[in-house]
Length: 337
Figure 1 (tube, helix red, strand yellow):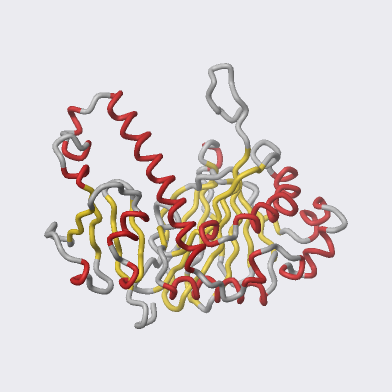
Figure 2 (cartoon, helix red, strand yellow):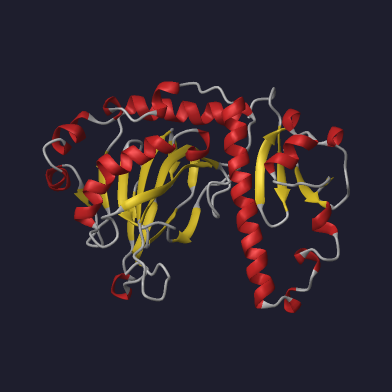
């Protein structure tokens, strides 16, 4: 971050954290961004109450409400004494608050953020590699056969999707937002650094990308999981020495995942894949894929994987978790059968 926009980290009890420019950290903004209706209390990492004027760059502070501290707060009750009914109620309340917090961030960002490259917020054919478009325009099947490389029998595909100019502009846009000091939440439960692109205005971009380009491919490659993609979570992950350098073994919260290496210059950071979660016959797979700028991966969300550490430089990747509608069973639940 630039020195003119010193950043601090603010954590809500049970609702995650945001990074925010110190000059924007007043009581009204913190109440709004953390969806708190009552008086807020700010404490340091030692639990000592502090005043706003005492906030220090790069430090972490807890944003608490009066309700968080009273005897009836779920955080004041011994977990062993919580009934299932109480746990369900707490979970529902937390979910609703998280939604309000997300809505608050989106509104706050829309009011205060000035994009550096507004022209990239709407999908345009000029963003794609010419070779990809030339073949895709003929048919998605031709694209799979001629452009996409099948890396493994577990259907890990690699290809080049976006051209260098677009990737450069997107990284610059991300860096511009990072330096703005506006609220940034963690992109997912594992990465600490990055940016949720939907929160800064890219939702329609990815709706169009999935409908027009990704779904026509995924319905052929992954007919069970990729035929009706209708929602997404699009974000940037950032790896840098002193911040996140690697990513532990996991699977994605998606049906189909698109992963685009944007840059910048880095050494290391290869990905490894170890079979599908739901298919034990694939669990002996150990496939290493070398990340490089421009390379795009398409794989099932349940394809287990991780990222090895970078040893120098910075790596930015665009991740799109694509999800499809779930069929309703007679039990009333979305079982996805």
